[in-house]
Image (cartoon, rainbow, N blue to C red; front, side):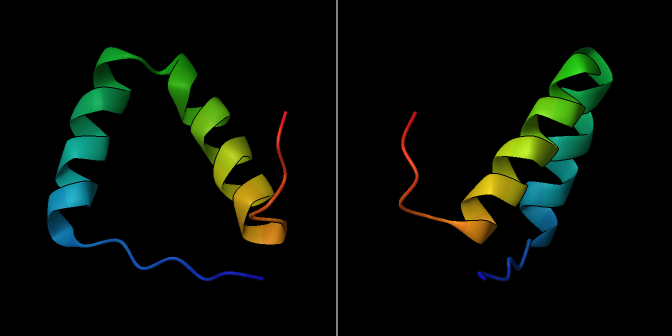
Amino acid sequence: MIQFVWDSAFKRKYKKVIVSHPEWKERFAESVMLFSENPYHRN
């Protein structure tokens, strides 16, 4: 499993984007979870 470390610039940008597009929050979470479990998975 891969662990992610988010820097402060990413966190700020993420918050701004999620405010504009709240539906992306769940999609992003699913993508990150899938990548952390298997980084070589392709759709």
